[in-house]
Image (cartoon, rainbow, N blue to C red; front, side, top):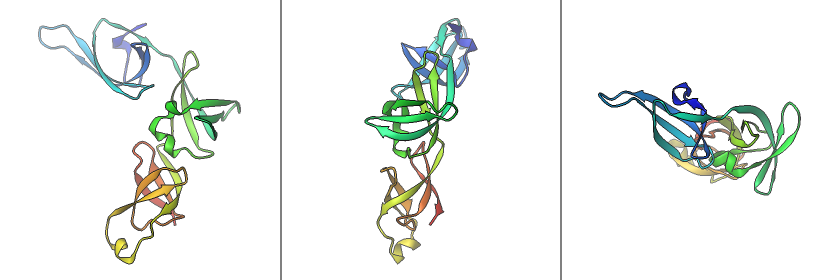
Length: 188
């Protein structure tokens, strides 16, 4: 246990029995009232955002974490088999640990896994951008190329992304794994 004043943005604490990452922490001293810390947190299991007011003297359970690089190998039911890039040990990672970014995982992708002090997986961080191939999209007509509209495209991982009209089947594109947005065409 440590004082809330020793915690900073990015720290992971156990709040109501579940791991939460501190996304914002502001110290407030309103007039005649006692000082407090307003914390914006995200639950690492459910992904929900939580706002909570800690008294300035309150203690929290700080979780010691370890961040290691792994490479995605193959799916195993609802799990994903990952290999440690240093020791070559393999582990199964549940889909829930990856979250919404699961739709951008492809063979050979390197990710970072955040482990708690007891060895449980807290979260999986994908690279911010991935390069994927467009496997299916409607062909663009001559008139479509002149406009700035978008169209749906299915990428090699099975996810659907909105792309500009000039993108064709077989193009390699860069996609933001946080938002699922098209960034740029890498190769025709």
